[in-house]
Amino acid sequence: MSIYLPIAELSVNIFLLLSLGGVVGFLSGMFGLGGGFLMTPLLIFMGIPTNVAVATSANQIVASSISGTLGHWRQGLVDFKMGAVLLIGAFFGSILGIWIFSRLVAIGHIDTVISILYFALLTGIGLSMLIESSKVIRDRIRRKSVKRKIHYHNWAHRLPFKVRFYKSKLYISVIPPIIIGFVIGILSATMGIGGAFILIPAMIYFLGMPTSKVIGTSLFQIIFITALVTILHATTTFAVDAVLAFFLILSSVIGAQVGVLAANKLRGEEIRALLAIIVLGVATKIALDLLVEPDEIFNLSVIRLVF
Amino acid sequence: MIKQLIILFYFLTGVLTPSISIALVIGSDQEEIYIDANFSGEELLVFGAFYSDPSQSRDSKSDILIEVVGPPEDVALRKKDSYFGFWLNSKSVTFRDVPGFYYLSSTSELTDEFLINNQIGLLEKKKSEMIDWSLLTTDWGSIINEKEKEEFYNALIRTKQNDSLYKQVSDEIEIIDGNLFRSYIDIPNTVPVGEYTVNLHLIIDNEVSQEYSYNFMVTRVGIEEAIYSFSKNYPFFYGLISLIIAIIVGWSGAEIFKRFRRI
Image 1: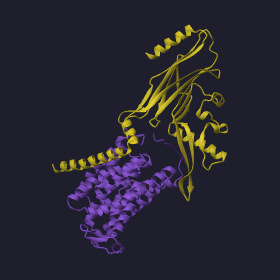
Image 2: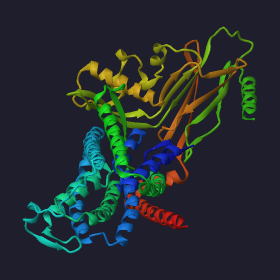
Image 3: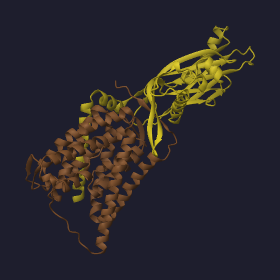
Image 4: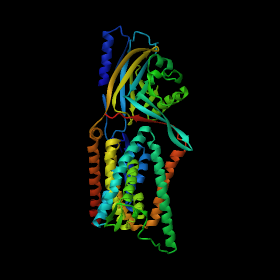
């Protein structure tokens, strides 16, 4: 059974769509990630136009971040003030990101740029996860416990415009979080991701935020950034497919809940290593698409007239 | 039923106008094709009758030609080139007002000469050396080389063919009893919306003897049409509603599952 997607303007198999959402949701529930970094490339592999994949993915992340934030908020693990500061940067970043995106669509390089960005991103994520999880597995075998530093003091603490973030027990300049938000905003608008896997390490290492508050705060600000990106895409690139988003959200919400259950029963490192391999597999596919001579070196796109 | 009427009709015309030795009467099963949620392509039935006077010998060769032309659109054709091992888009050409869909079918194979003389066929020229560029509006960009232009032209046809949007065949028209014809034309699910024209030609001895044209529409209907036009006309509210749906489904999905887990 297939369903017609009104904005992507093509029919896709509904079961394929639901299983894609379910699998990405499952992985995101299991690892606490948004899953946008897998959703967008897999949609493109399915034949969904790049712009629709990016814009719709942002819409889907809104839904998955909301259910995640609720849990953290109830436990008081969201630093709203830090979230707001990050959002100031993210606001301007996503506007710039949308402008870059529209320019790339106009000059016809969007597919290539998105492919290269995703290749870099997925290789980075995949390799770091693989190294991290194999280290944990090795340490476990050697029965060693890893000591972690709790608080970092670096250049972020010496800049002006210092503000006190009570929840995170920080007194730092607002400039680093605004810059981080700005970068995440650009990436979110151009790639259709929430950016948690960049945001979380940045918040821990650059800002020195306590690990317990990081996930909730990042999820909280991802809701707003992806919401903004959805609106910006809807109004400038007209690429948000509500029907596609609806089925992805429905299946990913269910998948995420199953993933959370599974995460409690399984050992983390092995699963993380598995995810790392999946991520690297997707990265390899993207690289091959760029490197192998295509069967058809010409591609046709209809220039839609907005009416 | 319709077919019977048509047969009756051409007998009448045959009787009333004995001077017309051969007449062409056609029908089609639909005037509109609707794209809805389950749209996965459709078959368009074109049928009719070509009547020959039985008193005349049928030595003369008669053929039926069916042409379906979709709404014009502007397309950008991009060529990939290898840069340091990466295949990236390089040159780009814009073709204006090319048919979004094109189908040509005949009862026997037609020569290029015939098609060119009668201005039938894709972009009215088939062989590359006979491409009449004046018939096309193109933005060549940096391309000035004739050979490269030809390459782009052929790629335009080829990519459209690969998407099942351009097709030329000579074995899809079914002839029944020597006088009736019937053809099922595949309308794939990727067709653009708009007005389509069906041109029928009765060809006798390599000459177009009769012509008949009619139009049909491909339109979006139902919720898909509503969503599409809403997204174009009220993009801000469309984005907002997409968000609200995401919030409601995301929220309620998690809540329902939590309750379900408690039981």
